[in-house]
Amino acid sequence: MTSGHSDIPDDAIGGSDDGVRAHVLIAPDKFKGSLSAPQVGAALAEGLHAVGVTSTVLPLADGGDGSVDAAVAAGFTERTVEVVDAVGQPHPTTIALGYADDGAERPAAAVVEVANSCGLAGLPPDELAALDASSLGFGQAVAAAVAARPATLVLALGGSASTDGGTGLLTALGWVFRDADGVVVAPGGRGLERIATIDRSDAVDVTDIEIVVAGDVTNPLTGPDGAAAVYGPQKGADPDDVAYLDAGLAHLVEVVARSGFPAAAQLAELPGAGAAGGIGFAALLLGARITSGAEFFLDLLDFDGHRAAAALVLTGEGSIDAQTEQGKLLGVLAGRAHPTPVIAVAGRNQLPEEKWPSAGFTRVLALTEETDRDTSRDPALSADLLRIIGRRIGEQLRAGS
Image (tube, rainbow, N blue to C red; front, side, top):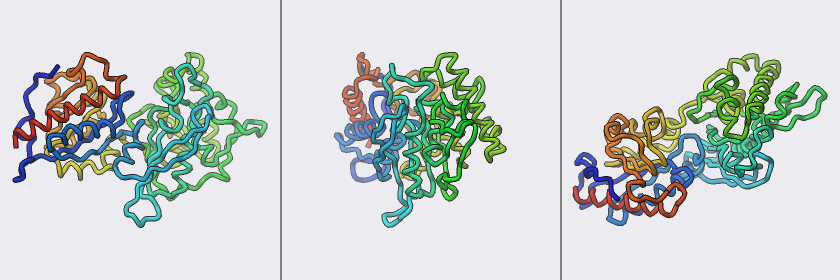
């Protein structure tokens, strides 16, 4: 099956005297559940390369799962760290450290993500733990990154399994939460209501590190639009659990307010405080700023610099729809790429052709146009089809040279 759409327009083709006139920047997000962003990029590049078209692969992320992989693919150094998952089981994860030059002792930036440390995807569907899951493993990964003293610490908060107000993160950084009897309260949503005091006397110093939360979640910490109410159900919380967790988060804010953070209530109301079950709130307590994940990662990975050398940008993600235009990664990318033409490839496309120009796309191609099989659960098939699409685009570029 083919889309039947016209070939790539002439303005997608650059000019030179050596036969192949277009260098392509391949800058995809992941195809969730099927292929990582580096895998998507590699498959498309293989298709282009098969017909002699050169490309640069720049896997992207927006602050969710895959953020560390994207940073590593862009040249950051991968470091393995031992952490615990959301329910306390040990496992290795990775963080990414980026150095300004080979001789630098201190990383310019470090990227740490919730998804690969204690994320929801790390738990079997029948083992979700809405009340007991914690962000401790993420905190352990953050502590490892902090030990390297990066100038900037990037927190990618997508895909969390817990609603603990970030107490797990803070515990790993030396904060101690105790109940009224002085007993240490383990991180997790279940213990939030018991917290009476917070001891920060042995907390890790992060004052010389710029902390950035990169993501698109704008929920406050508590209330009907808060962390528990909006995201608790997908983490296994029933209505009673949601009410319990929301009350626990509100109680946490009260204790924080009398423990050296008089503006805690104001911080809890900020957009993004409810990200990752309240890790956003904990990050704000550490002095973080919250910013658009899409814009931040495009800057971090030097998208503009790579785009300047390309005659065509080839991007993609698992699903493209009307939300793509609303500040999502591919929509932001398309705006940044202008006037360079952008072709988007998706596992599934629900964006009508008449919407492509306003979204910034020259064309949108979908794997569902190539097969009747379900590619979302078939990584090998997805990769094969991406190679075919890459080759077809390359052939059209060659034909126009």
